[in-house]
Length: 284
Image (tube, rainbow, N blue to C red; front, side, top):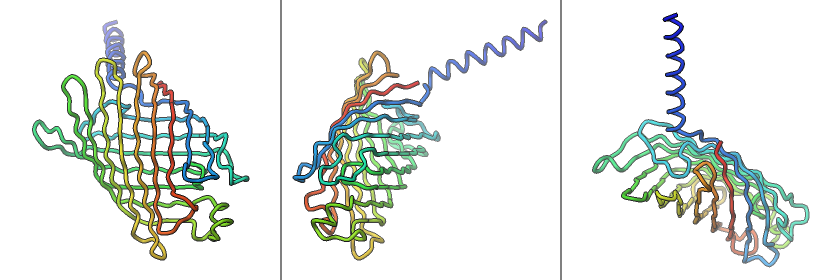
């Protein structure tokens, strides 16, 4: 009888411990529904693309958690998106697209007063297929270091930087460059090595858990490209995250600016994309 009571007590303690741990570290699995608009305003043949989709998300950091030393953090997302007006000039273009992202962080050291600055090993792979109206596909893989600090008083301000080496591969849609500019299919692709820089900002109001975000990233691909080619991309993003009742249900508003540069005009106009979107995220 005493043995049975001991076993039951142990099981209850284990259950309580598991529950406490689950409360301290919520499940990072989520799903989301997305609606958005995007356009290349410099192209007379570019439509204002309207679309929607859904994502499966795994985020160990959620949207407002800091970093701890010697822990692994993964942020992953897979998205399916369907465009109603993908590109007026391209009659045979598919309207559905897919995106995938995998980010890995491992903080390994810190410095400064009270060790506020955290240094992490960082790697990521991002890619999309048949996306952004004129993109056939694009992939970016980087590896380097991240630097983060959380400034906190009543509210939280998170500042982060990433500096890394990277590999990028990108290809445009074939129709416009081939038919109007006389480019062959072989000149439409870019692949090579470069460096990557990112600057992240997030301000969280602790009373409401509302967060305002801003980020800028730049990839400069200039090494190991064929025939003295290069590829550069700038990505500027602003967002607001609003919890709906609790932090398991979020509403995310975002606007993005994406600019690409090449040694050759591939599409007949400035490769600048504007995007706005709204997303509902539910954590399980």
